[in-house]
Length: 323
Image 1 (tube, rainbow, N blue to C red):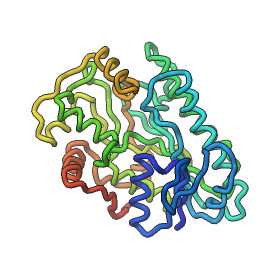
Image 2: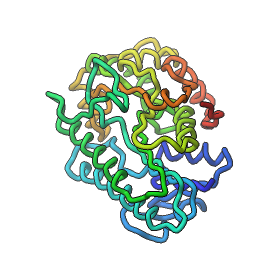
Image 3: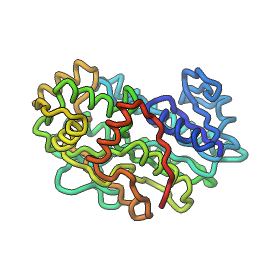
């Protein structure tokens, strides 16, 4: 298949690019900074010659959007919103104008749309959309608004011949340098891998190999549309999540951090504390109902595998897809 990946130069894009290329597909990445033969320039906002790559392709997987790991400033808020909504809109316009449109459009989204909660997991059918929880920071509510606008842009795209799926994706754990797992493992090595603000907030995650397999599963299933949670079925409290990671790496102690310490660290890293403090208890209801089987459903085994691959520099995500 010919697969076009707008915004495919980040961590998740690199994972998909590598895996889909290894599987024998033709992968074209749309990026603002092309550096390889398979990369084509686009600005993520305006129509252009890049649309020729979409016309005649089989699949579009749109990952474009400014990283959420940034300071909560008005300029960054606007960039996060605009980069997601504008890129989704212009991809939809390119698909609508194509003489031979792709059969499926997978659109990146996020589990940030769900509420901050501890009592029960969020799935696609019964999950609570966030934004109005008492005593949550305004920035968390804005993340929900970004996600709703992002998915609304997908819904409004007039692409009657192209199936659309919103990938509500948890943190993708891979051994690649610079990814979220690499950051967490680095903190653990420094002795900073303890509970944050008590550590009762839930962490939702997905192993990179299961992420790729879930994407391939959704490409093959012509009957699945709408939002799908890409998250492992075993979310767990942050305290337990980091304890398991330390054990997998052989690190006995992780110093705890208070909320103000987390805020200070996030400020130093030019990031924000939502990624650390919001309780993201999300499960893959639709994937499980449709028969998808996870290779890495629980964090203890997944962490051991990721640590092993990180030690040996193994980045391949290839695994056979099975229903």
